Length: 255
Image 1 (spheres, rainbow, N blue to C red):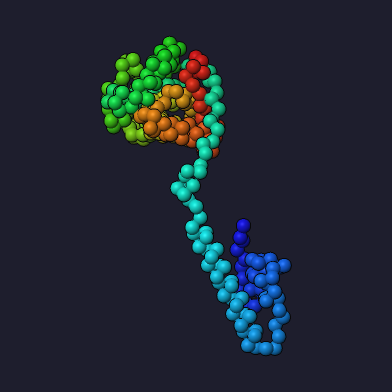
Image 2 (cartoon, rainbow, N blue to C red; image 1 turned 90 degrees about the vertical axis):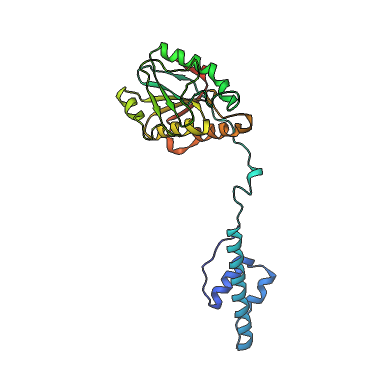
């Protein structure tokens, strides 16, 4: 790999630059290894040649740096990393809460988001088990709907917060959690790369332990499946979460 060499315009500096670029054994360097004689005309030609070489290479190095391949250029060459490890989770009903993100009829239907529909039955099972063990259940609504799908509707006393993708923004979600002594969250719902990703991320950044069952989050359809993959990878690997993020599956969660 080329390395930049700090040089001035003195002949001895340019000789060093040429040697670094061409190698000390290069035949092309022979011309530059000639001792400076008393022939001022020859010396002037030699120095001008060295200066031109230095400038040309410097410009070339700069151009190659400016035109380094971007991620868009390399897009087709990128291979997906290994899938994140899924881990079993044991829930403490006193310190855990289940947060159900934006599971509304207006979007979670066969036309708009068929993959969301596929998560309803598993989420009903998870919700029933959580309630049976006295786990705190909290709901969120986004800007695209207000009617939560059948089987997942909140019961009396279960809080509902309304916000965009990040459910902590302009809501009392954090206060609700802290007032109840909650230190860990199970985050499920839709969209995977929307409400689930941003809320789970913010929860971890705010010091909560976060559990995301990958079969409890969804993208709209198979054509957008990459967003689920990306979300899972990012949640599992982002260094800022400090080990507070766990990926699992619904049947690996024990109450």
